Length: 74
Image (cartoon, rainbow, N blue to C red; front, side):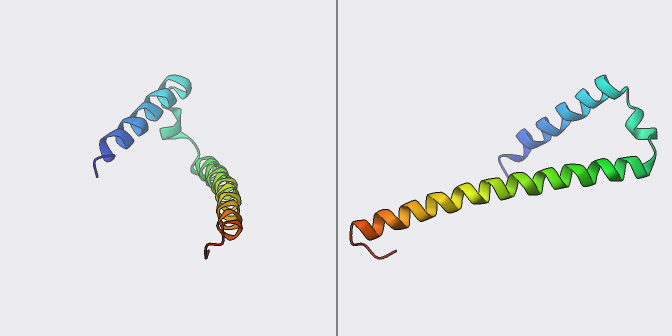
């Protein structure tokens, strides 16, 4: 929970940036457009999660290979 204030600060800055860039027009934008934007952002999050997952898999595999090389159980 100690990270929550930092997270809220990040969200606040994003909202302020959106206000500066879009002049608060998002609050009156067509809901279908907002849904499409959220869907695109969620696809990005999923893609980044896959990239991170793939990198972690390579690290895990390297650790297992090293453990086997040293005669340790995985």
